[in-house]
Length: 297
Image (cartoon, rainbow, N blue to C red; front, side, top):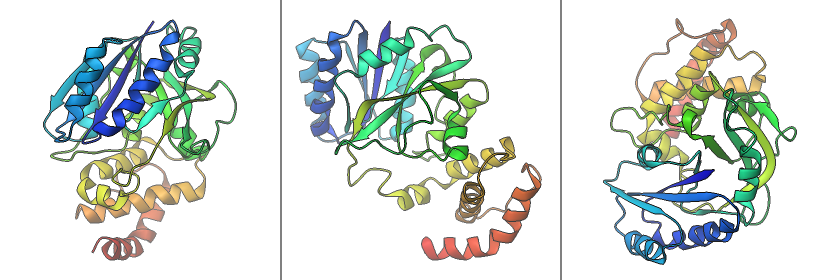
């Protein structure tokens, strides 16, 4: 079994040694691995750090440099280069817990031939030791990412180990010249054909940076409105939202309206599923328009 670790990085060279050391600590497990680093146009000392890692000759490392196209484009390139049975994205400022590979390999060995699954979801911890978000409802829960976050109200980041044969059929879809889209857009496409198995075991630790996406969400929305509009449109055209709590349904409708306003486009009720979704869109459009204009003036 082989694990492909994918890291997209942009001017985060100083964080890479911590991730590298965490990979080395995991090599005691009987699991081959490769590290694919896609440098998204960095102008810091990222290349120097990676050269030092390669010179150590501990694990196979592929370094790929591209002009600055954003994290999602970088991961798309990394997936093309991956040769492992398992594919795990790990941000440049995240790192693995010491027994991460053991947890991943132990569970994957029983599942790789299960064609109903596209991967395994594990927990992430924050730097203070707290679990990011909530634990899964139960160990080895089989579900979809949509159901987890929209029906069970899961939150926080999760680490996903994808099965290569399924993962390589999907990519992060970017609109026009935009550089970012939520990972959930791809997950929901995968949910249509497969399920994911969940484990209440942390395999990664995340450290949020001041310049990260999660702390600058309004700027992310403003720079990438087309992709986000497509994302919320797809939820409303693929899902009638049966089983989705009302507050989460409101979240989808409000954000759909927000991105219609940012894109200066009309709402599309014709392709929208669910009568309630259509009614809410009509009722909330004017207040949503006003709030969006105030928020992004």
